[in-house]
Length: 498
Ligand SMILES: *[C@@H]1O[C@H](CO)[C@@H](O)[C@H](O)[C@H]1NC(C)=O
Ligand SMILES: *[C@@H]1O[C@H](CO)[C@@H](O)[C@H](O)[C@H]1NC(C)=O
Ligand SMILES: *[C@@H]1O[C@H](CO)[C@@H](O)[C@H](O)[C@H]1NC(C)=O
Ligand SMILES: *[C@@H]1O[C@H](CO)[C@@H](O)[C@H](O)[C@H]1NC(C)=O
Image (cartoon, rainbow, N blue to C red):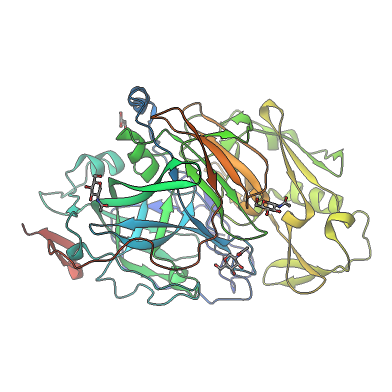
C-alpha cells in the first residue's frame, strides 16, 4: 500500500483492516516538524500496539566504546518490567525509569526497534492524560528538575544523529519527529537530564544510580500513541548512538549488551543491561551494518518437516536478513512462506473454519493447542533454532477460541523484497540476549518469572537478578521543584534561563 512512499529502508504494508490499533514503529525520524495529521486511531478488540522497527540508514558505531570497557566500571542495570505482550491483554511491555533531580517516575514502552528515549513533556496539549494501564501518566517538566539542559542543533548529539541542520543557529533546539506506520507520531526536542535506574548491587538487590542522558521531550503527539493504553513514552533499544544504552556505554557505565525475557504467563519479565552469564545462550551473528537486529534465516520446519521454499527468501547477499524485533507483537512472513507455514500448521485439521476478526484469522478449538498443533522451528545461521510453540503463535481470545499470530507479508525492504520479521509473541518465554560487543544475538527457552545471573563489571561478581511484574506506584521519590528552564512550546523553542 504505502510501500514506496518513504525513502528509509522499510515500509510496512498496513493490514487490510485498519480498525484495530496495530502500530508499526519508526519509519522516519526527521527534524522537520510537519503539521501533524490526526489519524483514526480507533481502538478495536485487540490491543496490538507493538511497533515495527524499521531500519535507519545511518548506523551507530559503538565499537569506539570498547576501549572504555576496559576501565572495568561496568555495572548491570535492572529495568523493572511490566505489561504482557498478548494482543487481548495490555499488548505491550513497559519499564520504569526515573528522570530529573529529584527524579520522577516514568513508564516507557521498551522497543528494540527504535533508537531514542522520549517522554511526553509538560506543555504537550495533545498528549494523553489518562491510561487504562493502571497508573498515572507523568509529563516531564524541566522546570521541576534541577539538572536539565537543552540540546541545541549545534550540539554534537544532534549533528551526529542528524548531520548538519540547515538554518541551525545557536540555542535553537535539536528537534525530532518519529512517525509510525499507522499514522501516529510524536515530535519534540532533545533535552539532557539525569536518568535514574536500578543498578544491581548484590544478589536480588539493586541500588539507585544515575547518568546524564539525552532524550526527547515530547511536545506534540497524534494518533494511536494517545489511546487508552497510553504510556509516558518509549525507550528505544536500537544500537545507534542516540539510544540510552549507547549513551550509557559511551560514558563507560555499562557494556553494550542486554537481555529480555518477556513473560506471557505471569506478565512482566526480565530486562537487564549488562552481561548475562546464566542462562547460557547459543548465538547467531547479527547481519553487519544494520541499525537494528537482523539475522540470517536458513530454513523453516513445521512439525518436523522442512518447508520447501524459494531460495531467494534466504538470500543473504543483500545483507538484510530476518529482523528480530521485540517491539512488534506478531511475526510477519513473506506470502509464500506464510501460506506454507499455515498449511503445515492446519494440515491435520481440514475441518477448521476461520473467522476474520479485525484482520486476524480466528477459529474455535476445544482442547490444548499445544497437543493439537505442531511446533514451528526457524533455523538460523550457526545452527541456532527458534522453536515457536502453538501457545506462542496462537493467542487466545475467549474460551476455546484462538487467533493466529502469524501475519501475511507486508514487511518490505528498501528494494521491495518481502522479508521476515519475528515479533515478540514468538520471542516470549525465552531469554533473548543481545551481545552487541560481539555482534551476536541468541536465545534459549526460559522461565521468565524466575531469575538470571549477571556479571558485575566492577567486581567480577556474579549476581542473581529476579523477574519483575510492575504495575503502578511511585518508586522514585518526588520532591519540590527547582526552576531552570522556560519552555515556549508553541514555537518549540526552549530558552535556558540561568
Ligand atoms: C546521581 O548520583 C549522584 C552521585 O551518586 C548523586 O549525588 C545525585 O544525587 C544523584 N542524582 C539523582 C537525581 O539521583
Ligand atoms: C558513535 O559514537 C562513537 C563514539 O562514541 C563515534 O566514534 C562514532 O563516530 C559515532 N557514530 C556516529 C554515526 O555518529
Ligand atoms: C517459574 O519460576 C517461578 C519463580 O521461581 C516459579 O514459581 C514457577 O513455578 C516456575 N514455573 C515453571 C513452569 O517452572
Ligand atoms: C502482573 O501484573 C498485572 C498488573 O499489572 C496483574 O494483572 C497480574 O496479575 C500480575 N501477575 C502476577 C503473576 O502477579
